[in-house]
Image 1: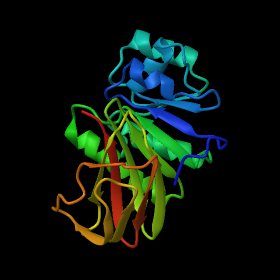
Image 2: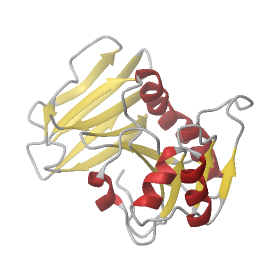
Image 3: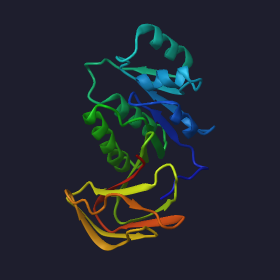
Length: 220
């Protein structure tokens, strides 16, 4: 499971923690979506979003006007009369427009409820037929549903690799190419067995027999 560079992907910039660290993530052919304040971030950094979406309650009228002028398309929602967060609205729009590779940028911020909800969006994307990943300055989070083999290339930006089950248990977990290998292990919610591993080879493989896992790559 590695992102296909030849396949068009959508990058969703959220209203979470963003900074100049995020700009190198953008490829020339990426479809840029700004969710709420994320649209302002892209506009101010000279990367106008193809789509701006949200209730825009975190920016003022002048900033919203700048976003509307820069964006290729703007979908504004009432802050009260909506069921989903701005990030979920953006994710569903990306999927409805045919994108199967999606990166949610900056979705981990100071609000733990929003951060956890954004992690759960990775599962929603899977259910809707797409593959989404969360990325911020310190973390990169993927969702796996078994049975699956996932290849990870060594990345100096995120040396730590942790596995956390998203179902009561994730079974048949095998790690190859890691400093701390596993073979046909069962990870249960509440266990710390999968925390803070390291790749020992240029590429490692995670095998998941059944259940669901979060693969969290991180740095301090």
